Length: 438
Ligand SMILES: *[C@@H]1O[C@H](CO)[C@@H](O)[C@H](O)[C@H]1NC(C)=O
Ligand SMILES: *[C@@H]1O[C@H](CO)[C@@H](O)[C@H](O)[C@H]1NC(C)=O
Ligand SMILES: *[C@@H]1O[C@H](CO)[C@@H](O)[C@H](O)[C@H]1NC(C)=O
Ligand SMILES: *[C@@H]1O[C@H](CO)[C@@H](O)[C@H](O)[C@H]1NC(C)=O
Ligand SMILES: *[C@@H]1O[C@H](CO)[C@@H](O)[C@H](O)[C@H]1NC(C)=O
Image (cartoon, rainbow, N blue to C red; front, side, top):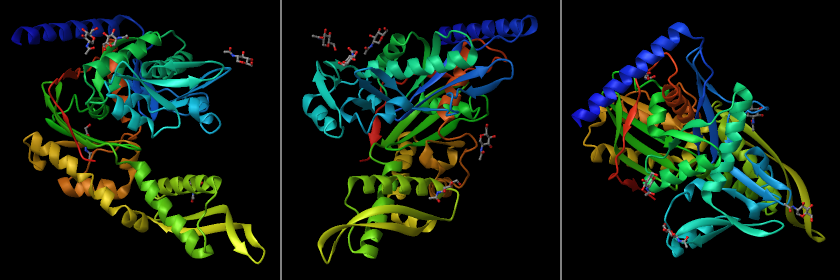
């Protein structure tokens, strides 16, 4: 270990000198290494700009800084990101999403069958792995890593277009709970996209780096990642610039979708109260869900929002069953949203308590709390967490971009960009298991 440390020390020194000399005698180079966040529902790519020392999250030609993790197969081609997503309604059987939940994972046949039932596409069992069945002009199977490669290729191209240079090197993030096999298959996905992976870092470590915590005087960092469908809590311990994951816990059935669902159930009930019938048409439910999702987002900023949705209700009039067009209107308040979800919000604290117990830490010993994932924008959730710890969490970085920001910083470090920062070397922890509440 001491030998390894001194080698790492020399390497850091050598890199530092190289970076320093480079800075003295050369113009700032273009970034050559990209940082990739291959998420379950969204993906982003970022770079460290050597000139300014800033992180740039790459945007597509419409100014969007992430792409949906969706790949759709049609007789005319393979469509990834937004183009793939747009086909999800018309081509549901051949539009694959959530592939990250399957990548590199070993399954037994029963578990996979249950998983498959949740999706409009077919997940099949092949030699203890998951594959997706696609039927366009012909019928074939694709692997989760192939789906990953299409998304990574799209992001590689976005970065190349933006930077004007070819890119073939990247750093990529993975969930802390990913085992070696899942990491290997993620690397394979990148290789299929023509990318050489210089380092794989854990998502919570990346989020901590987005706040510069690899350079700050902190020891214990708690990362809460609450996305659309899952909650992940990690306790990181930093020792001399190295991050070690001390404990992990989570709930893989808790997230933004559940909060939207509660609000949807409430509005459906309000429609029934006002008109005597609930909305039954698939399109109406779809419209209502979209409107409620927008309301949920708005309620993080506004104390109340007016919902207005045109619906076709199947009522019974004098002439029997008829379709009645109505404009459903309802004022929805943040207070109501919090009440409807109070029990779900409370569930966020359980895995936080678990990682503290497993990490043998008092909550007062947590130096920084980092919030990741869109659902951590919900004011009540921030409040619950800050009340629990008696201090404010770190929220200045967009919670949807915290991971890609950190990965891009790591990419800058790997690319030898100046100013060379203290690297966050990660000590892999092979024996850690994630505690799941759900
Ligand atoms: C699939 O079939 C359509 C119509 O028959 C044809 O135009 C298209 O080229 C075919 N696609 C592939 C990939 O073979
Ligand atoms: C099945 O998977 C194992 C390892 O996971 C591999 O060694 C073997 O070659 C695979 N068999 C087939 C038929 O692909
Ligand atoms: C992962 O890849 C490394 C390097 O290619 C290899 O040595 C290791 O056996 C692989 N591990 C698993 C579990 O596939
Ligand atoms: C939500 O906010 C946006 C922007 O502030 C606004 O355009 C939109 O109408 C709002 N939606 C609702 C349902 O109030
Ligand atoms: C967030 O992180 C920074 C370190 O970059 C720290 O200085 C700051 O005090 C932290 N806390 C809050 C509540 O922003």
